[in-house]
Amino acid sequence: MSVDAAVARDARKARAPVGAILLVLLLLAVTGALLWRGWSFYALGLDARIDHDDFRVLSPGEVVGHGYGVVGTGLMFTNLLYLVRRKLARWPLGSMRFWLDLHV
Image (cartoon, rainbow, N blue to C red; front, side, top):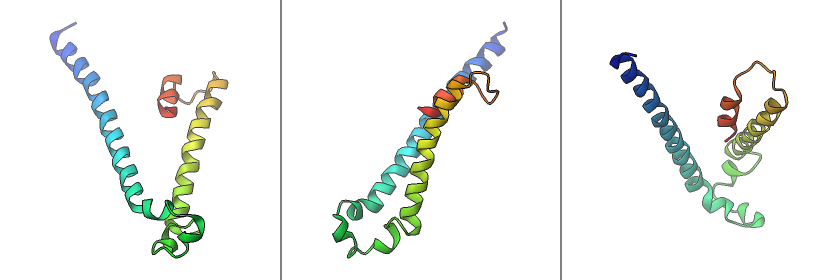
């Protein structure tokens, strides 16, 4: 193996963790922003939420509150897809490693 090929292979290996780190940082930033946005509302009791300024936005029947529910449901189904993929070992859609990474 030539030195150039070894360097290229090492560069590809080094890029994968950087992408994963950036994804984790992005998810942490989004989670932090969502917590900052809704903490004062969701920390209240159910009766007190009605009087909160953000009730029209963050309640379950409104755009943002409903969006939180849709995203949460999607994340749960993503985890369940790993179990389905594991049971169907001959399923041609991706490797088990990919599905495990998606699951985690």
